[in-house]
Image 1: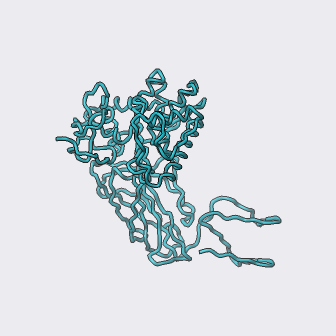
Image 2: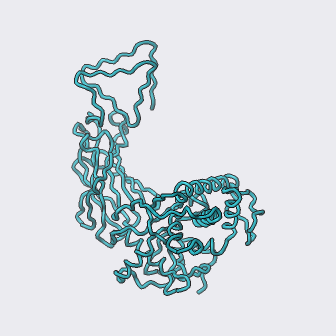
Image 3: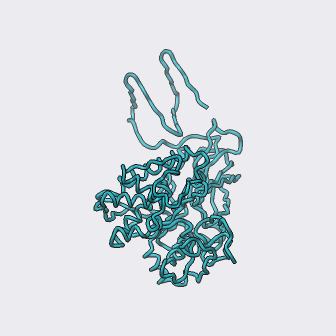
Length: 457
């Protein structure tokens, strides 16, 4: 609801006692003349004082230890969350909690206490809405009828949990002038220290042609430069230095090794004018060695092509601003591992030609990382949030520190199960877990794509 008031002459407000003005968002003052503020005891800027909300349910929700003792938590030093301004001033800054599970159970009860968040509140009970956010970007909402002084439990799936936010409403249709949706608590499940941006070696020595090859390669690896996947470029920046030559670094990509028609298409246009020009027909692409049409674009063709054109241009801009510069910084210093979710589901033993054991190790470390059984974050999931838009084009990708992961399993061989090979042959890259595969000692890192034809027995 909104209200506009027009006054033709002078507008005067006289308050006998205190006068408070609060807004959930911005407050703007505009004048064609001057704005004058006077006060006998001075003018103070900063956080608002505590608000009087007698009829409102204004709780503070905090994590406490459960009777099961299957998790521990502690404050993250120097990190706080700013809660709703309707809470008392001394309760608005809530220390961020680092949560660590101490059980191998798939599901866990988290226990929370509800206390009075505003000392003037006289409405003792109401509804707390828990918004449970998962690592795949999805969210589930639960409503809890509760009151000051009570506790409640939330049943969560350990491997999927990302963070939980709490919002309060009264248990009537309105309270105190439609004051609702009060942000009253939050916890984040991230038991490893966050990655820090560090300086990395530049690649400004690359020629124009090598830069075009670099971008064409990463465009293929990132689903045409999708914004969620742009960080893949940092892995190839690292590889250029660690592999000793530009050619050796690019050969880590199957798109470059095989010179796929999509790679050739990107490279041709990058070498012409450093720009991507998608043609809506797709039948006249030069170097389309396989003679394929991109049939995933048949539906809503023009809109989808325009979206992809923009993504590719954004990626080129990303490289110019972050990769091809004198002093690049990255969250992934010395990281060399990268692959989509299908790569992460490869299970191979002692395969010297393809060295695919790294995928099993990275997958297992990812599971240990999610279970808070390792101290260092060495795998990052780049979730492709556009997968619902692009049918069969889920580009979800993983970046990982291959060297440190291998060192970890050398020191902790008991943490790497004796896993069975997946039973689905996929191209040349080895055996992969699939929905038809038997139970494997190392579960997949992510969901499956259904095979077009079932594997032979």
